[in-house]
Amino acid sequence: GWEDARNVDVWVDFAERVGEAFGDLVFMWNTFNEPNVYAMNGWVLGQFPPFKAGRLLAFRRVLANLGRAHHIAYD
Image (cartoon, rainbow, N blue to C red; front, top):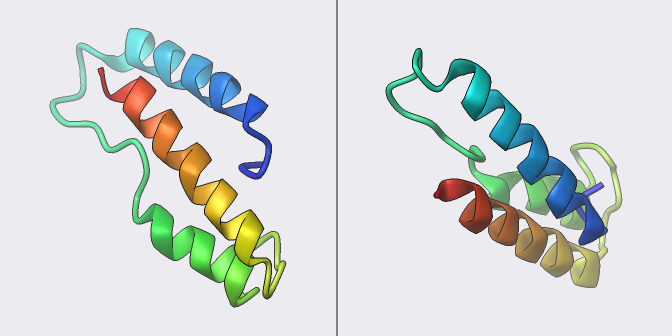
């Protein structure tokens, strides 16, 4: 999952493949939709998967990894 920084590279590989396959068909891309909402509900409130309420350090790690993945995939 997004707690593990090694998965950033896996997601970037996926994004590259999607871009190559559909790039000529898509006008505008969105790497992540509201990553803060996803992370807050998954690792702080525990209302979204992985349902890990109260995991503030993990929440920060998840946001950092999502941010890194976005910045790499953006270009």
